[in-house]
Image (cartoon, rainbow, N blue to C red):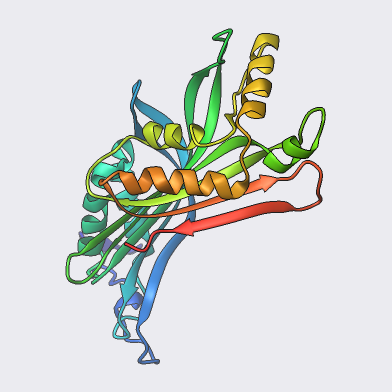
Length: 273
């Protein structure tokens, strides 16, 4: 910093700005996670069909903090995010975590991001296209030993038709929209689109953004011919994930927003491996 001139022409020494964060805490207690939360930030993610996709994520970033430091440097999280935002994917989460740990002199680093992901989806008969929204999450942690834990999650809307209702009714059966939420740990890169397809193929019928009359007929009849309880949905998805050696752990939950009840039906499966 150059010398500063006073109003009478004299030169004063440069101002020294105290780094309060580096001062020790009065409490000798380590903090597991400290950082910034709920940052709304534009990012670019990989898209299987279009190369990349622009979206807006809600991002949380944390590091650990030993008691010898009063606080962490919050601005550095934003600096790292600004440098990496044009290349956010499963492939480079580890790089972001390494840079976070290095820049903030921490033993562990964590990042969580949730964002809408869009797929241009054709209707089943007419082919009319509309954008379907899916909610995706990336979660990553890097510990002091250099071990990285990555979890990818998706939320997929589905349709289910009740097997019991179909069995006991002479005409029709009740059906409803539901949501499937999946989290997976994995060995190598995979496409979000492939995981979404796995879920949609495991329901009574998938959901579409745009349907013409012939499409409505198709999805109604498809769901009726493929009745599934919420239990059936999570079991079917868990079975498929278990058969894929790329996935080392999974958690699957499904919630049906019941059309004839004032409550939801829910099921959950988590792998033991």
